[in-house]
Image (tube, rainbow, N blue to C red; front, side, top):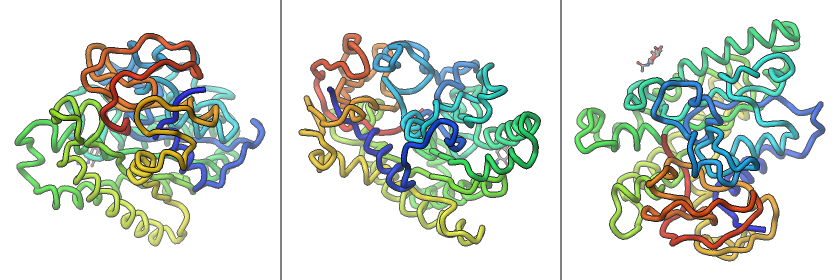
Length: 359
Ligand SMILES: *[C@@H]1O[C@H](CO)[C@@H](O)[C@H](O)[C@H]1NC(C)=O
């Protein structure tokens, strides 16, 4: 048994929203994933980019204990959703195995470092921006149609589940990346948020592309992720600017999704998942999720609770490190390899909640 983490809790929330059960593999619906590092499961490994998760300690809690390209020490949210769908994780779209039977499972189009805006993540050079991810979805659908026929392909896509996670990088890897960034010169934060929300609305043409159930996550506690703590915090408290940005972004995102649902004429196509509130709730009501404490050593009740851990950009050699409990310290060193996904070890010093963010 081991630790709980907010990532799992987010996964659990999404599943409650979906009313997911555990269907048999053959009945599993297809799953498509778009967005940034929180959901990338290996696409960037195929790209010449600095936004990559192909070295330890990434993957130390993954079943293979190897880095996979996931920006996580273990499984990430798409993995957990796939598990609940009763399916294998959808392959990264760029995987050479993305063909034949594997097409039926779905595809993960996400690419670490991207944002809503095209100028987000320019420092990572060669990443798959969101417009291109949607184009790849269209290419995928052509390949699927060639494999199972046009009608069956359309049906498979309309029955599918879609997850999109974007926006954190438009703050951490754009607006707040450097003092006096171009976007912060152009906009006050109160104007920047409506601007990226309106751009996001244009990006979300997934209904047009055949999707009928799309979970859209808000930003998590982006002021509290290890990289931000390392850069902006002396005492372990969360970065206030980023915390405020998330507070502005999430309610506006929810309103925009309501508008979009109105435009497509169904109120249940786009579903907002408030990851910020979930992680906050986890921090302050850990018992509710079967955890003794939200920080430090914990003994969760469920096996699944120990499976998903921190995701984010904080884990890299000689960089902020995620402790086994899913809490993070900006100054820690990578903990020793753990015995397995359900192994345990004592946490390093814990100063902040591990939630989401970039790249
Ligand atoms: C971003 O790039 C895509 C593809 O090049 C383009 O279609 C889109 O209009 C761009 N978005 C903005 C806001 O400039």
